[in-house]
Length: 189
Image (cartoon, rainbow, N blue to C red; front, side, top):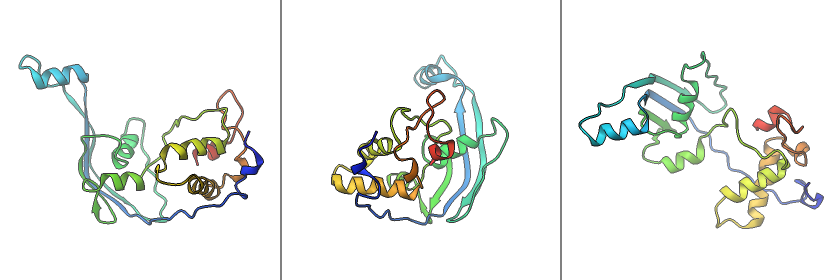
């Protein structure tokens, strides 16, 4: 468990700058190869193997997400909801179409875009025997810039815990299906 001297109220917090982003996507298309890696490789490098067939996952998809707007992506199983989110969050290669943030194409600024846009996977991986604070601490130490001081990193971590409304469960274990921990809503945040 976390030492009480590291409580979220006792450490200096760091203001997180919020950026209002409008995300537009137009004519998105995404398909996957059915033949597997070996067949795809052989078809590109030999004349004896035909290219594998492809399955179109997304075709001519357009939409937008604006600041302060609640957006639901709904559809039946296999409809491409997760594929759309993967394309929009730049997690997959090979998608066609146009994606802009505040009017700027993401293809020109993909590293900047990756810092602005993301989503939590349906089954995100957490260590059940770490507390919420410890989980945030390790994530912060691994992802925040090396040039940032330890004090600034701790402030950022504490600010994020407060912003996400997790201060009441900061000392609780994350848990899993076997180990009792925080609620599903807290886990998602």
